[in-house]
Length: 184
Image (tube, rainbow, N blue to C red; front, side):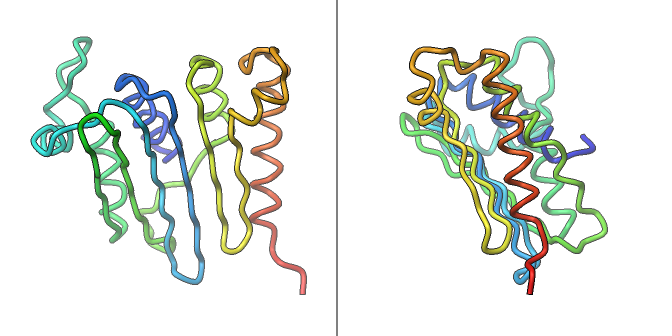
C-alpha cells in the first residue's frame, strides 16, 4: 500500500467485520515530537491475546476469500520501518485499539493519503456504524462525529450524496486549516 489512508481503511474494515458499532480513527501529527500517531479503536467483539499474535502474522486471516491477511502486518511494518512502533490492545467483548507511531522525518514514511475519501468510503457503505474522525496537527485539531451529523440531518441518510460531499469538504477544509503555517 502506497498511502497510510489505505492501511487505515483496511484496519477499519476489520473493525466492521468485528461487529463494531463505533469506530474512532485518530491521527495526531506533532512536528515538535517528530512523530505521527494513528489509532483505530472499535467497540467490536475484541480478541484474545492468542488471536492478537495471530493477526500480526501475514499468513493468518479469518477471511475465506484469501489465504493471507496483510492489513495488520503491513500497518505494523510501515510504522516500524520509520523507527516507530506498533501495538494492538484488545479485550474480548470490549473491542480493539490498533496504534501505529511513525517518525515524521524518516525517509521511509509513506504519505498519509486521502483521509477525506477514506472516511467517505467507510461512511457511505456503513451508514449504521458511527465513526469518529479526529485529526490533530500540532495545536490545531478538529473532529467529525457521525453521531452529531446524524442528529443535524433529522432523518436524511448520512450516506446520501449531498451529505457525503459535505463530509469530504469538511475534512479537506479543516485539514488544510490545521496544517496551515501559523501567522506570526
